[in-house]
Length: 288
Image 1 (cartoon, rainbow, N blue to C red):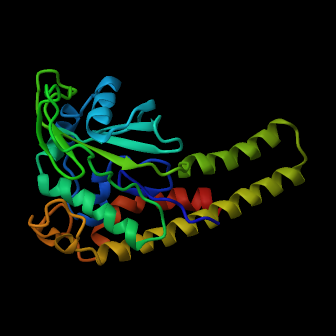
Image 2: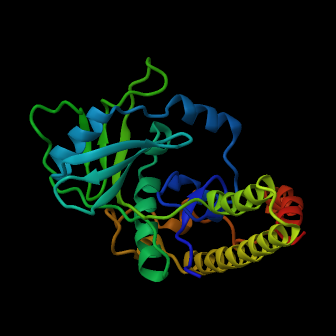
């Protein structure tokens, strides 16, 4: 079985085809959960860029003409699938960070160096930041750019959920990782069983399909567990201050930044409340 690609989101690691919400990496390396108040503020500051804005950034700063731009699901950021018209087969993810996270420039830089570290240390595929091609601010500056770094653009013209706000938003372009959601894979197995039942298949065929689905699920979750273990080991070896891919190597080392290193070990019993609700589901859906 092929090792699943990593998609990080909402305190879970699953297999997926695009990278959404890298900031949820804090669920792995951060001991303090984001408060409801912080989440509410991030929602208010959620960016709502238009396809025209995406096209402008791609054209001016990456020399990319998109043949397809598709909005993707996100919690408090904005994400777009990009298909390159200039280079057949090239696909990207463009991520607009909420303005709350954007203010923490060390965190923004840490996201980039962390992904580059994972991509060089693990066999799984993860999206990695694409360097900005044109680092000179275009004239006229319709984006109201504040700063351009090696792989991120900070600008002020991006609409937010709250129309009265006008704050700085960071935008990055990432490589695209093909795949499917863990949920869609397991749902497809269940669908096969349901279709057999609806078509009056024999009990023997239905039972065979159920057993196959159960075995496939167990193998898949085993592979996901291996990937999580490898990721945990990779993160424990990670040092932001020693990462050569960092756009700002003189920033505070990651082990002093609360958003990256506050826990000594991933499987901390203090975090049991985060995973306890899933045990019952696992026993019912996987073991039984």
